[in-house]
Image (cartoon, rainbow, N blue to C red; front, side, top):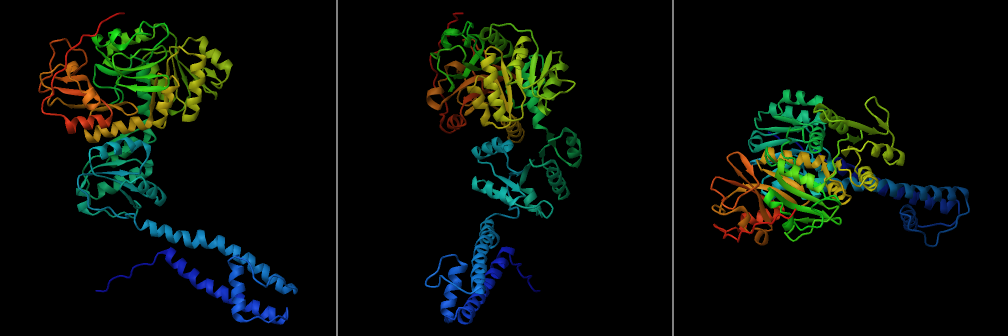
Length: 559
């Protein structure tokens, strides 16, 4: 049985053609020059001298003694040779040389799925899966990214991420590879996501397939094709924004700013007339009210896990955890202004429409501000216009929701609105996770990105991890209570040793954030640790079998 011949790469064939053409062109111009100098200029040249001239001219490196010609045909020959040399320089590198080296680089890319073991297959890398990939790397879980585009695959490889470049139409997936895939995330276009779902199901893959859809109309068809679950991140983002805006909306979005049915994460900007302004966290007595402050934006800087002596300045944004009733009380303390006006939604795209719909469904008054006319738009104009800002201020809005699709525009808009309406709560949506920190520095009360929503949702679904990203480098993780049994949550000194602290305890299906002096952690409890991902990892790696108790100090209440 004869073995099939290996097909030569196109760039290799092109390079071989180039290596054949170049000597022929050099010889042709050398012969023409030798004949022209002999019979037209009457200055005979040897073949070697003519060959040298042709090489100098074609490579545009210059001339030696031959720099003047009299006969018009010789001048024309020289001009044609010069332009031919320039043309070859610009032609050779992009068409022949660069593709050759690119394919040599691509040879390091895998073009078929390797043998996997308990791995998660991700179709297309994007910021939406960056959070998931970060968690997979932190947990030493195997994953593989599938890219169809060569340049995209190279970009992923430059990030030191495992990648395979393969066209879904031509893909062949061995049975042993399918057995090593524990889950699949389809994160490309809706059409490519559907193609991957069909391919895997046809090959007999029976594991979970989680897919993203840009249009909600595509969710049901993808499920019919075999997707386990299909998500529309923008709608999840709209639900999270609406939930944050109105306390009457009780629908939870898993993995988004929630720890349990009765516990939440709350961001509050402290008003200048607040009873909390000027007090330290210890003197404010928030812990006795069942509120744990885990972070604070002050002066454009974020303070994670602030110590009790931290002063609560007017204008700072406090990040707190507590029961919904306690957080509502904190909201009244932090922002004493009572507002009964409407919500103003700036921007009426896909996210803005969904936010308006959800707020109206629960009976909240909503006004839409947009620069384009629409039957549902009450205020038409650019929010940056002072006249539009005056109209917005005249309604005494309860909150302003920025649902603009462009992050740069949202940041500038937030700065302008915050300067004109310093006391109105600002809620913003962004596309990129890094924009959240910038908006917090600008005084936005709550900002959430599509990337955050998608990443946390995937991590919670695939890894079973109970965690919430609160702020950059600050996370709440749900872990077992090993080594802490018998201790009071406030007597466990983890901050100095590991850089994290306990903010809640899960017991019998409930999440507790308020503890009396007799409360102790039990063996069946789960605890919520707040800190950076690195500090939580440090807790897992270095904690002893039992942690000694620290003295219990009751926080005074001086309000």
